[in-house]
Structures are given as C-alpha cells and as structure tokens.
Image (cartoon, rainbow, N blue to C red):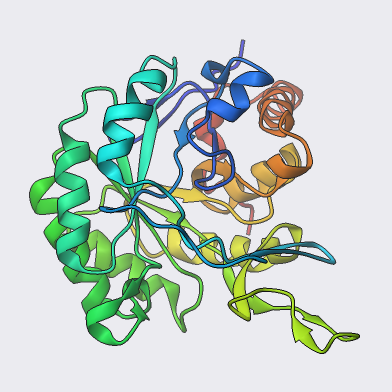
Length: 303
C-alpha cells in the first residue's frame, strides 16, 4: 500500500489534493456529490471583515483554455461565517482552511484574530492579491515591503499554520516568496490568477464589467508550473501548487516541480469529481513506479 499522506508545517493531509479557494464555496456544494472527507483539505471561499457584494455582472467569461473571473470576493463577512456557516461545516473529516482577505493590514488582522479562535480551523491561507486601499489599490502581493508587512502582522496574531497565497502578476515571484518566508509564513501557495481580459468584438465591449479579471484554467499551467519550480528552489517552507490542474498527470507535474500538495480549482466547474479522480491517479502512479509515499514526489524532477 502506498502512503498518500503529506505534511504542510503542522497540517497533516491524508492526501495531497485540496480544493482551491473560491471554486466550491464553503464546500457544502460538493457534499451533494460525495463525501468531502476524502479530500486532503478544503480551501474555503475568500472571507473579509465585512459583507462584500462583489463586482457587477457580468463577472465570469469563458476563454479558449480556461476562464476569467471578476467576482470580487463576494461574501457576507467573517462574523456571518462564524455564526452561520462554520457550525455546519466544522465536522467535515478533512482540514478546513479559511482564505483571509483585506483592504488594509488592519482588516487582515481583524479577520485573522476571529478565525484564530475557531477550534476546527487549523490553518489560514492569506490572500495577498487583494488591493491595498492605502497604497492606491496596489496589490499587497506585488511588492516585498507590503507582502512582508501584512505577513508579519498576521503572524503576530495567528498561532496555527499560516499559508500565504502568492500573486503571479510580479516580475520575480521568488523575491515575494522569500519575503513572506522571512516574516513567518509556514507555507506558500501559488499561483493565484493572472490578469487578463476578453472582448466581444461584435458589440465592441469587454465581457467583464470590470474590463479585466483573473485568468485560470489549463492556459496558465505552464507558467504556474515554472513559478512553483522557481519558488521551491528559493525557499525552505512547503509549496502548494495550483494553476490549470485538470488531471492526475498535471498534479504529479506540480509535485515533481516542488509542490508538497496541490489545489484544484477551475476543473471543478467542469466536473466536481475531478479532485477524487486525481487522488486515485496519484495512487496508481505511485504503485506503477513502485514509489512508497506521495511525499517522495516533491521536487523529484530529474535534471
């Protein structure tokens, strides 16, 4: 029997396959299809301090090899999550990870402090792709000083596993990864979506109300894979890979490039069973190659 268990700092995962934040709400949607306890972990929908209605419609558009989204972190705020959603999902038999968002460092801190009190939430994923309103809307994750500042302050108030989700819309993602590692991140997850746009040529209008949005899906996989490999070779903390993973072969590629675990996102819109298929595919790959543990795949790229 092969061992599918992997470890992200203090977080023990029964297998390396997790959902990506924003692609299956707060996981309740997936329970209509299967027992989510089969997954390695669940990344919950992005959560902010106060209610956010999100961006105006249309805010999703298909592309040739993926999708654009500009949902805008629609959610009812962390207090609503704690009072109404957390009680319903807290006993799922797999780690629940809250994706924490904010427009200021103070908002990140406030959300984190509230989530830190929840016994059944063993980790957070700090989304530093959010716009920093005090810096004119510039993303926290595109400069080392701002990435360091938010990571340092959140680390100060959070005593569980801290994962920092990196934006790919930077010149050198390794510098951002090293910056957050230096401020106490236990792991980094990458990549978030790439900035893109789509146009209706007949109507001569953008397909998204916000004009630009986040590109995800198979189109971004080669770039995401390259960034995971670069970051793995630049930091000592575990890397969680994502970006266009559609099958087990994709997930294995990310692990060979340096990922300890992976997140599946856009693929879930195509088929919610794909994460389970990936788990089985990884198991079959290990058995076929006579590899005892999934953890042995991490960084095992032959150069």
